[in-house]
Length: 236
Ligand code: CA
Image (cartoon, rainbow, N blue to C red; front, side):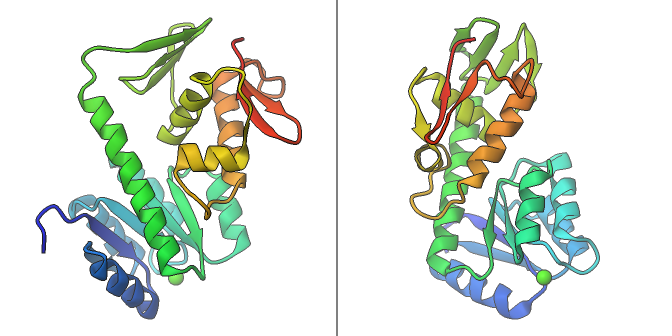
C-alpha cells in the first residue's frame, strides 16, 4: 500500500453495500475504514484521519444528518452523503448540514469514484491555497471584497460566513463579470462534475449565497438570474 493513499471512511449499516464500496475503493488504491452505526462512524470520523467520509443517512444510533452536523463542529473533511429517497435529497439540499455533496442510491461505482475524486481534489486545492495565504489577492466590487488567498468574502468590511462551495461559485462568476453561465456549465466548472451532478445543487447554492450576500435576496444586485439560461455576476 502506498503511504500517500487517500483514506475513505464508509459509514453505512448495510454490510452488503459497505462491502461492495470497500472492495471497489481498495481496488482503486484507497485505504478504507468502515463503521456500521452513527456513533461509531462519528468517533472514527473524528480520529481516523479520513480524506473523505461517505455517510449513509438511515443509520442505527444516530442518523447521518446528525453525524454530519457533529463532524462539522470540528472538521472540514469532505462529506459525501448517500441518499436513498427523494425526501432525503431535499433534506440534504435544504439543511445547512455542511455536507459537500450527495449521491442517490442506487449508484454506479464509476460515478461514486468520480465524485470522491472531485471532492478530494477540491479540498486539496482549498487547503493548498489557504496554506500560502501570506500575500493576499483581493478583488473588489464596490462594497464587496473577495480575498482569493484567504478564501474570504467581505461586505462593507464584515466577513461573510460562506461555505467553500459558495465561495467558489461566487469567485467563478465574479471573475467573469456579466458572462452568463448555465447550471450545467457551473456544475462542470465549479463542482467539477462532467455528467453526474444534479443542477438543483446550483440553484440551492445560489439561493444560499444570495441570502448571505444580498441586502434583499429576493431582489439580487450581485448574483443575477438570466431567465431560462442561468446565472451571472454583476457589479452592484
Ligand atoms: Ca442505512
